[in-house]
Image (tube, rainbow, N blue to C red; front, side):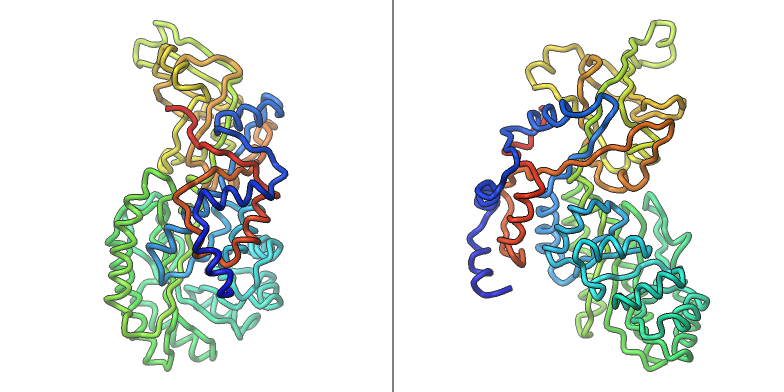
Length: 448
């Protein structure tokens, strides 16, 4: 970043950045998020749900990361949400990318990433993918077995390797260590094998699993990393990299926990590696996109529950919407702090009676349940419901079961006065891009 650009960035807060985009934008500017959602839905068929990605929220998360993890370089996990506009945004922010397949690497490259800024973070790679990685210079990758070392030795012997360790997490929604990573007790044998093959191992990595609620899992595994650092010296390796993976929550409701967690991780990294020349990286995905994306659904049908049906539960209203379990609402989605907000103003909501309600998806399957029980005002066919915190994985796991349309995607930039753009490499380029791809919204409030 040039000194001139640094100086200009220091003067640009969230309000000024919004005004800068507004002067360049040819897109619409809406006074409220409500008005944006209603207008967007009015141009779509009734069976078409849609995602709205707030690029300002992504910038806010990037700012929080910079403030709380100043020494940990983030590589955005493409698998969390591979929307092309998002990927290009991360390129403009100077980010690296965590990719698990050749396809994901190609998406990052198409968005403008350099192969050198990609970590191939799957411990089992196809030979075809290794050849492609070699071709584009994506030489940083993980392993956890002798078999993978042999494959890399044959197809990409000049790669820089990261040994992935297991993390004994018992408080993550998805425990990735069941499938990936080696035990610390097996690390010495793997390092010996790598040395015999003359492979370049430069560090260690781990992943505590998705949505980890136990800071000790991070800190104890960081201690394991230090153990393997010392172990590597026996074979002439001088490790330089620690990859702390991810597992961070992405909802706005969990920001407080992020502050707590980052403080403990930073202390552990400092306690174990402060006197070593170590580069710290991470692979956050859900953290960046979780709260940035909402899903808008339309009510297609409604059923008032009869007294006979209601004997064994308190559900009084059932609604059918144009997305569901086979679309955006995968298993354990509630762990991502997903919640429904009807698109009606606060006054109207207060005047409507509220009922304990159940929300179904639109397919013919009885397991297509979106929300088993929630308090909603009395809604009608055609009303809209916005679901918050839908950014992580929803897009990637969608299917077209029973030919229900996949959600379409729209992009907005919602004014955020808390933003400070001093850390952005090139504010002009960033504002130019956002002005082209996103509608502008002055107020994020949906309904109180």
